[in-house]
Image 1: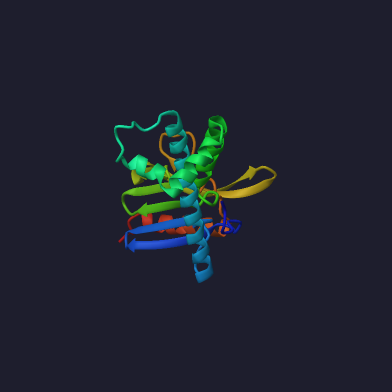
Image 2: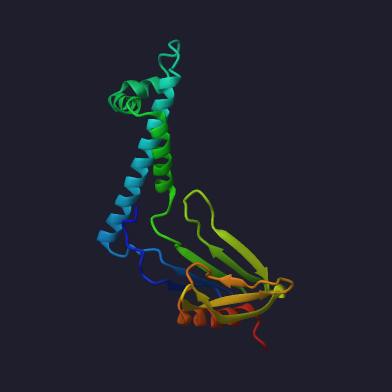
Amino acid sequence: MILLSNNAPPKLRVARPTPSTVSFTVSTRPVADTVPKKALLYFSHAIRLGLGVLILALFWAKWRSYFPIRNEDPESWERRLLTNYVGVCVAWAAEGIDWKVLGGVGAVGLWGVLRRGYTVAEESLLVLRGLGVQTSSSSPTYLSTATTRFIPTASIQDIFIHEAFKGFEVRFYLAIVVVGEEDTVVVFPNLLPERQILEEVWRGTRACLYEPKS
């Protein structure tokens, strides 16, 4: 469910929470900076939440059709839910759907609900002077956390911008050479922003990472 466009090129955000820390974030996440966009974003979240609750309710009602509530428990919360108007409608709908169809379609629906409404949203590079850098890539779903890696300053041999073929085009990338590793660590490996952004990140990283010489 993509209600906000995510076709815009990656944009760079720079934050400096302290004089010795700088964060470079490249993002394709749509920015809700106007009232209509904010309303559309909230509406999207509401639709996702409602659809997820409906799918789980159908699963639960279908399960209860095979394993009914015991008669000796007349005041259970499940019985109260199943006997109100909404519960009766959900139970009726679940009863008319084959469990295989419900399981397959429901699983796909839940996957769509839990998946973010845009592609790779954010990748970042956090630079801590005298300590090292941390790379991070956001997760495609709401249930999993971002993928991160910390590289100490002592393990950083070099930071450079290079170019490589991706399909039939040449793309620039920012890479970190780590001592003792054959492969370089590519920063922003999924978004691969334009060279101008990479150059700004490269200059800012080198300026912040190492202590200034007195």
